[in-house]
Structure formats: C-alpha cells, structure tokens
Amino acid sequence: MDFRDSPAEADFRDEVRTWLSEHLVGEFAELGSRGGPADERGWDVRIEWERTLGRDRWVGCSWPVEYGGRGLDFSQQVIFNEEYAKANAPARVSFFGEGLFAPTLIAYGTDEQKRRFLPKIQSVDELWCQGYSEPNAGSDLSNVQTKAVLDGDEWVVTGQKVWTTLAHRADWCFVVARTEAGSQSHRGLSYLLVPMDQPGVEIRPLRQMTGSAEFNEVYFDEARTSADLVLGDVNDGWKVAMATLGFERGTAFLSQQLAFQRELAEIIAVAQSKGSSRDATIRQELADSYIGVQIMKFNGMRMLTDLVKKGVLGPSSSIGKLFWSNWHRTLGERAMDVLGTDGLLVANEGSGAYELDEFHQIFMTSRAETIYAGASEIQRNIIGERVLGLPREPR
Image (tube, rainbow, N blue to C red; front, side, top):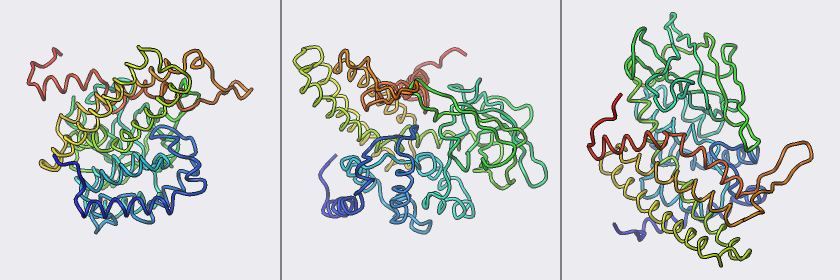
C-alpha cells in the first residue's frame, strides 16, 4: 500500500486543514480534545462545535450527497480523521448517531427513514443512544429479553437495558428487542427506533469510579414507537445489530485511535520532564507503546482496505478492537508508572468530588474499553472461530 497522498488527496488535506484553522478558535480551541464518546466534559462547547461541523457537512461527511453528506471516499475519511486528531479538536458528541446508527440506517433503512433521521443527526437536533446490553445479555447479546409487541400501528416495548451511554442526553435509542413470542437466541429479534422523551421510559444514572455518570440503566414500561420505525425486517434484526457492532469495532473509533498517538506523546514528554524516562523499564514500556500505536495504525489501514474491497467489515474487525482496547488500557497503566507517587493524587474540590487530570482519565476510562463494543473474551472467540477456523467453544 502506498501511504503517500495523491494530488487530489493532498488538495483535500489542505481543505480540511484550512477549515479547521479557520473554525477551531476561541473556546473550541481552548477545550481541546477533552471528552470522549462516554464523557460529558465540556458538553455545551462540544455541542456547539458539533453544530459548526454539521453546518459545513463534516458531520455525515461520508453519507451520500442526496442525504446531505459529502460522499467522501474512505481515503478522504481517513484524511479528515487524521487532521482532526492532529488539530486537537473537541471530542465528538454525535458518536452514536453519526458513527453507529447513521451507517446502519444507510445500509438497512428505507428512503423515508433516511430522510427523517439523517438531517437531524447532521444538525445535532437529535442525539442517539444504543439499547443493546441487558443485565443478562451483555457479552451474550442474543439473550436479549426486552420485548416489543405490535399494538395497532405502534410497538409497545417493555424491558430493561443497562450501560446505556448518554441515555440521559439522547432523544432516540436504537433498541434490540424480541418481537417474536417464544423465540430464542438471535432469532425473533428486531431493531427498533424508540423515542426517549415519553412516559414509558425511565433513566437511572450509574456513577463510575471517575466520579461521573455517563452510563445509565433504562427501563421501558410499555414505551411506544411507530410500527414503521423498524430498521430492516421484523424478526430479522440480528444482522442489523451485528452491522452496527461492525461499525463500532471498526471505523467509528478511527479518530479516537489516531488521538492515542498524541496521548502517548504527552506521556513521553512528562516522563522526560520528571526524569521517569531514565528508568530502563519505563523507557522500554514507552517504546513498546510507540510500536503498538504504529501496529494499530497499519492494522486499521488494512481493515479499511478490506472494507473498500468487500463493502462490509467482517470478523477481522474484532482483531482491531481487541488490539486497540488492550493497548489503551496498558497505556493508562504506563501513564501511572510515569507519574509515580503523583499518580495516587487527584484534585479534590472540597465537597468529596474530585477532578481527574488527563492521565488519570486515560487510566480509569480505558478499563471499560476492553468491555464495551464487545468484551475482549468475545473478540478472542470470534477471531478463533471465524478467522482462524478453530472449533467452537463448548456451549
């Protein structure tokens, strides 16, 4: 693969850099890249930044032009994400809407559904959350028990979801529910689009060790949604749900992974200033992290090449997800090694609350990355069974 820009790609890179330099100013530039898909830091500023992106069609830049996008090809999407990360631009708030739901909608939705939902995602007038995990259906998503029953021209949804990131901020939720009575495993599931602002939806925050509460439990008690708000065919939602996971494990985290290189550079700079880099073990660990982020980059390129050739992300996306999530967790541990005893201290606001610096944030939030979007244990099973052709794990 030739990683050099073609003349057209170089021109596009200049366009992205110019736009960012003109718009990434003031409070947007001051905020930097703080925050993340499961993080509310700088929320109001990030919302306004997202709207700025949306007005110039950088939200939805990969969508077809007829649906308001720019129709960017994969190389252009990579360039945009590279330059976005290099510019230290604010973390995106439309991750679930633009990154997960929109590509699934474009692949499986009707024209009417696309024209209904895509513009609202681009203008940031509607935010989305993901209704997948349940208390007894986390890694084993096929054990979903949330039910939906058709009542006239509406679905009536009853059940519980958990670890629903930013549900308290969301206007809509894409919900995997069992729509065929008596069905088991992946059969009889449907992919429903459910409005969150209604009497039948209760949201309960779950506070984490970071002190924040972006995750939630969501209870559906005869919540309702229109009968036509099913993505794909009724009772055939498993393949739609798996497509969403493919985007989550693959392209949706591209910008985040590119930002990891900047995090590593910051950790190395602190190690040098504190003298930690003189420790042979720490120096070796940081060198290993540098090698890892390069592997991540080229593995991501290989995965995107497969996507261009085949049009879909296969089980190989599990390789990328398994690698980056474990690499980032290890980076957080190495950041604490660099800080030494300072890693035991956080700023206390006097009321029992505390303010985490960037290194503490990396250390704590990266623990969850090996769980969400498919736990590492599940990724290893997928790689073993579907990539390497090993015997299936005993059930």
